[in-house]
View 1 (cartoon, rainbow, N blue to C red):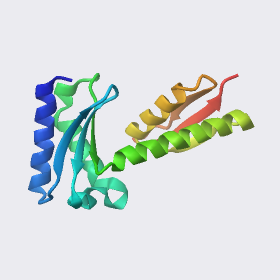
View 2 (view 1 turned 180 degrees about the vertical axis):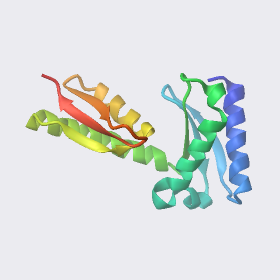
View 3 (view 1 turned 120 degrees about the vertical axis):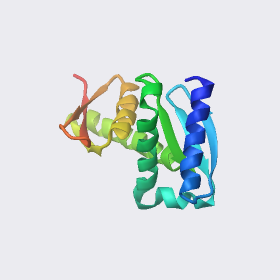
Amino acid sequence: MNETLTRQIADFVQNVVNAMGIELTVKIEDSPEATRINLEGEDGGVLIRRGGEGLQALQHVVATAFRRQLGDDNRVVVDCNGFRRDKDAEIKQMARFMAEKARSSGMPQEMGPLNPYERRIVHIAIAEDPTVSSESIGDAFMKTVIISARQ
């Protein structure tokens, strides 16, 4: 993603947070998977309470506002005080645990319901292990991921 777009997104997030009356600092972090907009500060609890509903809403607003500029190849993740990073690590760990369970029992394992972002994390974690596979099932926004041992 180009630097100008990244800066526009960071400024947009800062303006939204300021309009909410929350004091947080925006930091940009580029990784191969996505550009992360990290919000840091003591007021972060406002966004991460109730399972991070406020953070998820802010993520949705950013994705909607910049959908055209981002296209399909660029991803932006909005995080606050490491909440998403920790949650992502927890989801990866659970996916690996379920993969091991699927391998040892021979029975498919279910994870979910998960939103598209969470499903992507599971599918990426499972793709790292050639002995298991994953697929999403369901026809709603929230879907279940089935993890199965490869035959």
